[in-house]
Image 1 (tube, rainbow over the protein chains, first blue to last red):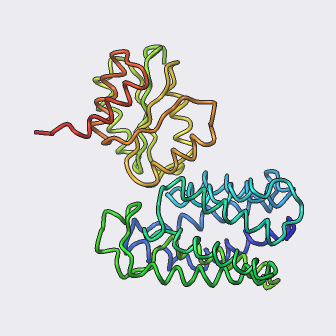
Image 2: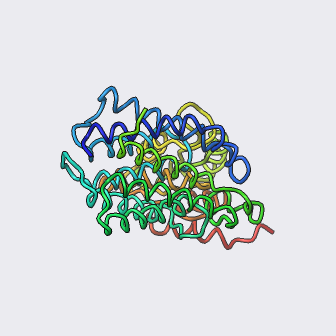
Image 3: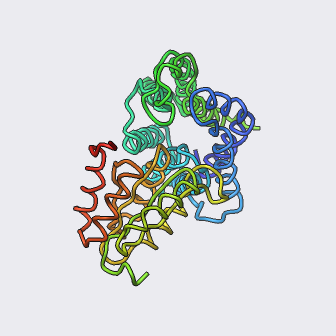
Length: 213
Length: 133
């Protein structure tokens, strides 16, 4: 994937999040403070705009992701800003300044995103957070690459695993964030952060497969 | 902010601008000249946290002896961590896990008395164990 593919990923993710903003906010209204869709749409649209207008350095794939991280941190307004912002930044750092990203390097970037987010929020798998979608996605991605899969195959495996991970958050009890104050009431709902992660991973798979709008 | 010169500054980060400002106003009364700066709400004044507001508040609260940051919930913690990661090496500001109001009061009293950042942070943390009645 080259720089323009990473720009396309951000654009596609922004479109998907905008399209699903109402659903994300409804999920968050059930177990959180009801702003996830609105906040994330604002953050991703700001990131997409920033890249499109080249207001910042967007010369390499890594620079694109680092710019996205900065935009999400400063423009989102809720906990998802620093969380996703840190993920994109760490992924961007892992890519360094290469101009073309292969399947192995993208795997390292996804892993760096997972580790960065895990460290920031100190959540564990099973706490009903976006890590419950991102973790399985990273594992499935690495497995696909290990079996010789290309970028399209590995990102598709990751997106599928993120969606399965999202479904698995339904019976979980939230232990992090605002939702953790609601205790048992969080059981029976998808985690909104896991839902947005599934969308972002789906956007990546679409771009890697050349299926963008 | 020459009044608080040499004293530890305090930043109160909340989802609500009104909550942060109210707490800062309350605490400022007993801070003995230490600077207490609110950083609440989003850039457009809505509910949420703003890394720009947090960063500016850290700057305003710095009087040469460091800054203690007390968050309320969730994104107040994460947004502050993101700011501190950004300022790595450029600030001695420290995020503390303490009750928002009681921790701010305890920290302000310690800061006003000239305590250093370690002692101000400890005072805020100990406020967790203080019984209200």
